[in-house]
Amino acid sequence: MDDPGTDDIARKFQRDLNAGLVALVLLGVLAETDEDLYGYDIAKRLQRVRDGEALFKEGTIYPVLRSLAASGWLSSRIVPSYSGPPRRYYRITDEGRAVLARWRSVWRDTRDFVDQFTGPASPQTSATDPTP
Amino acid sequence: MTADTTPRSIDDYLAQLRRALEGADRAMIQDALSDVEEHLRAECAARPGESEEAVLRAIAGSYGSPEDVAAAYRETERTVQAAFAPTRPTATTAVAVEQSALRRFFSIWGDARSWTSLVFMLLSLVTGIFYFTVVVTGVSLSLGLAILIIGVPFFVAFIGFTRVLALVEGRLIEGLTGERMPRRATPVAPGGWLARIGAMLRAPRTWTTLVYQLLMLPLGTVYFTVAITLAALGLGLLGGSVVGLLQGLGFEVVDGWQTSVDGTPLSGLEALGVALASLVIGALLLTAMLHLARLVGRIHARIAKQLLVAD
Image 1 (spheres, rainbow over the protein chains, first blue to last red):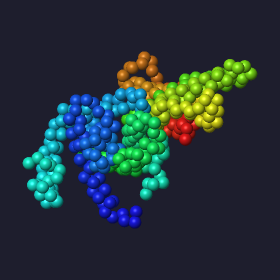
Image 2 (cartoon, one colour; image 1 turned 135 degrees about the horizontal axis):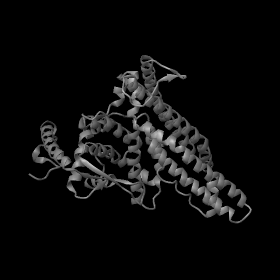
Image 3 (tube, rainbow over the protein chains, first blue to last red; image 1 turned 90 degrees about the horizontal axis):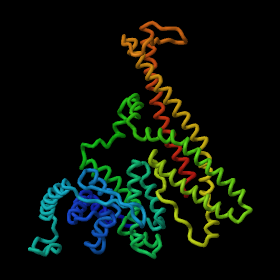
Image 4 (cartoon, chains in turn yellow, purple; image 1 turned 90 degrees about the vertical axis):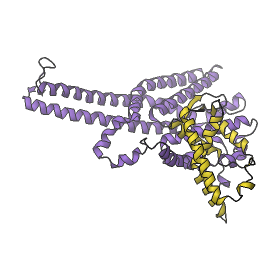
């Protein structure tokens, strides 16, 4: 708390980045499966992929799911649950798949562009992407 | 920073979230609360045997604090929606400020909540009579049976029934006025029968629920009377003015129609004036009725929340 500096700044930067990324990731998760998924399920899938600290808080994916549904890119239905309140299940729509395809290419271009200037690792020594 | 305010239960978390979202759009708050509740209950179900407090502490880092979650909803409302759906007129509040007072006054006709609140006012006579009957019957039978052994189970069953009714009333109020009310009955405290009965008798909500249900008779009567009177008066004036206007313009809508004030027939021009005046008054009256319904809906929801919902 004495040093509100770097941690807070990093967190804020992450939040700013996430504004669009969360939506992209969620569309990606839902496009990968044929099942309907509910928020908790999606959150756990993201956690499983990335062990340790999550890129974004689980609680923050729900508003994005809702806004994606409001845009018609996800369809949702409510299913009663034994363990508590009813659950809202989401499924990607054809429109959503089209949007995702566009976003993917935007994301790839953006990533390549950003890496060009800031990549700490040059493309040859990239730690995250072992494939040539 | 959040060390001492870490929520200790799901309800605690929801209360903090509600506080963090204060002033935001109602529907958004409701969405946020139900999303969070859904997730946290699922998390608890996935970790059987752990207390809510332990589960909340375990996921504090990965799930986010009430403030984090609130910020995400506000942010999404502000940016994502604006960027994703620019054609949707979401910023109604900003527009409303710029509209003229007259337009704002009449815009209530398009407000679904005022219509549903009106339905609530009309319905509350029926529900009020029902609740009142149940409570009076239940209390007097409980007192009468108190000397017999059957008195105790009867009283317990009666209180249980009033709780179910309170839950149903809550759903009705949430559906019609938008005020968020509990979705499930509060869980019964653990322990033996005697402990449960004791807890039930000590809970202030048990008694405030009865008070609410008694109160619904006079309130319901007033709501119904006011709503019906204003609606009948307004519609009557509108209907009369339409016929009067057509008649004044030379259409024979009703045979032998004569616009008169206190039995004195009016000339054509005067009749037209009276018709116009009653058109305006009728429209104003109906609009005022809708505003009143909205107001009653809000106030009543607040009363219901005080009396029916446990702290």
